[in-house]
Length: 338
Ligand code: NAD
Ligand code: WQD
Image (cartoon, helix red, strand yellow):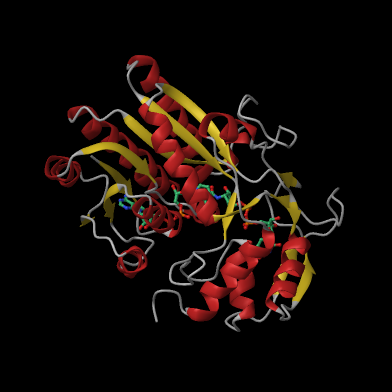
């Protein structure tokens, strides 16, 4: 029996494929490479010495997805495929609702037609919105997301909760990721954003490698210890391992279960930048810039539910996240487009 990994060529997907294969699991990958490079999957094979079926297809293409289910024995799905850039979603709401919602609905239809009832979904801490005080726990009321991307995540969580009411045998694990950074310690796979990065760590690594002149730290007048925003950065390998635990959990539980994947620690923008400079023994020029619209002062998880239900805890700290992000960037200055 295999797990279908949608979006398996992307940042979190490729790391999850490595952890799944190293644990002896069977996987099948589908990706349309709209935000990734198939080279990532070639390197997954290189890192693990294992092979797996790989399909180039859009998850919204029902005929293609049905064929994948017909050709493989799929008993569970990890659904990473989706568009994820917050700012772009404000400019292109139709594309975001189309891609993220329709892909999920088509996937659920095809799963139903093949009797597959186990889904692990990539949700996000963004569903907590602005009204909750950290540490964020899964029982807190969901907030109103401030952008179309966040709304797609909230809407898909709702769809999956409704589905689990209608089908008592269905298991949906809604993994709410905090801020994934880092890379595989080999330096062979990592985050490969198109254009100028929006997120902090890829911006820092591109300054470090000389592709960008300096970092702008967005605001130093927040009500936090050093005035810059706090986030719960999580190493992508820890995050990937959380997916294995979630796939196993879904085998013995039904219903929709939201689970945070974070470390529970809040680090500031300057903590991250200074740790990066220290562990990598280099300077990263930065300036303090105005606040960025929509940023919350502090977002970090309570990770207790993941430990309780999944038996999962993070192993890597901020130093390893900074070390591995840099190791990836310096060995692949242009990402997979060498
Ligand atoms: P990513 O863009 O690197 O990976 C997504 C993958 O899905 C890409 O390989 C892309 O080509 C593929 N894809 C997109 N639409 C598709 C479609 N219709 N059909 C087939 N393939 C498609 O992103 P990531 O950082 O690996 O994120 C994975 C998931 O986790 C996404 O759903 C994202 O919203 C969610 N998430 C990411 C973060 C983060 O900060 N990276 C945080 C919370 C949640
Ligand atoms: C982190 C901190 C910035 C860039 C986003 C999405 C969220 C989730 C993860 C998907 C903030 C500061 C950033 C820069 C900076 N994705 N910063 N200079 O905004 O916490 O979360 O990615 O679900 O939904 O919103 O992450 O990395 O953009 O920012 O000072 O050049 O770094 O202000 O405080 P964020 P981020």
